[in-house]
Length: 317
Image 1: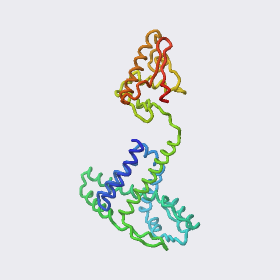
Image 2 (image 1 turned 180 degrees about the horizontal axis):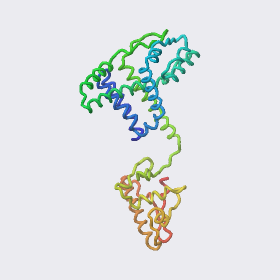
Image 3 (image 1 turned 60 degrees about the vertical axis):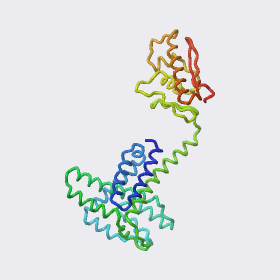
Image 4 (image 1 turned 135 degrees about the vertical axis):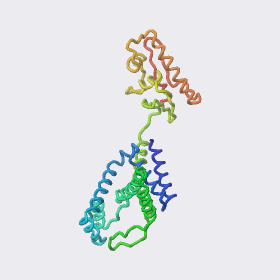
């Protein structure tokens, strides 16, 4: 999937969540959203460190919940906005709380993106809950599935628990509001990466023509021209591949080189086989002319005979 399509899909998930905010359906949206983050190749690679860190925090949360002493210690933590060192005692999200401690000691504002891992963990936990419901359905345990659905219905719109941090103003925040903000922040992180890369790419000088040999697509000043429409690549595909494989693709590419290196014609007869490639060049020009409404009819120029060659017409470079 292209980054443009990924961008649209992420924004659409957030639209879907807002539309169903506060309802059970919103948790289904989160389930699909997290699956998309973990399965789409570009996102999987981009988010790998963040997802690994989030999963580690979930493991710590699970261990803490199972250990009465650790759980009690977490509940008894005395976090105080006026006492920054108290934040260093947090057993989960230790890196984030230490960062907030330093900001508080320097009397600096806490960066909103510093809570990104917490946002992602909350979304993953919702998705895991939906996965448990689906697993119960598959196993035929409908009683347990209904119990978990009831929990999800209640949690989809509830007042968030007290933060237990002293000397900070209390304010009511619903789970729906927090999860919406969480998805927006995760999206911001991804979209900023996509947009920044696109911006940097646009700063690079671009060639007027290029050829994607894997997809067999020729680009002429932004216009996309499909060269191969079936599995078998025609001669004109290999003509373009040979031209663009050259370090300086504006120079001549000899038919003999194309035949031997790209077509496997080890017995190339320079007295007559050049005609096959000349014909392929003509077919390529015809294909390009058709795709461009005959605005480009002479993209490839070529010679004939024993030393025949072809190259891109310089007026398109």
